[in-house]
Length: 119
Image (cartoon, rainbow, N blue to C red; front, side, top):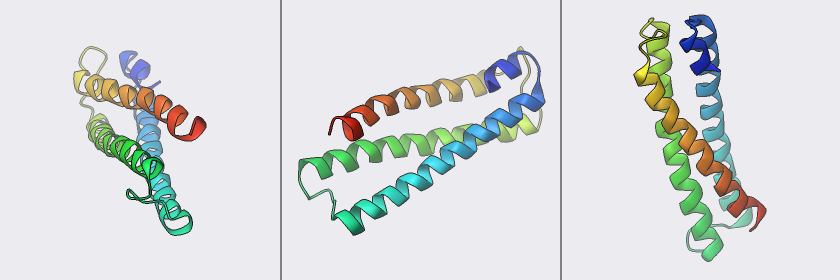
């Protein structure tokens, strides 16, 4: 939605939806931290607790690192957007961060299926 908005020179909609995306990225990271705490404290799940523990923490941990980087990248683009740095003809910085973010989204779909559904 943000990408379409900036292509249409709708700066308000762009900033709103990019801000929502950054907030959702931050919420995802908070929930992942809570999940890790619960898994460790209440379920005894660690990297050393067998193949599931190792796989769970490695896959979700690497994904979390990439979500962190994507959230930071989008936050920078959001701050730039608030300063008026993008328009319908010039938004490559935002587009590059958006491509990265969508790649991380697609990876999450696969991780979710393999770590939470099929496990």
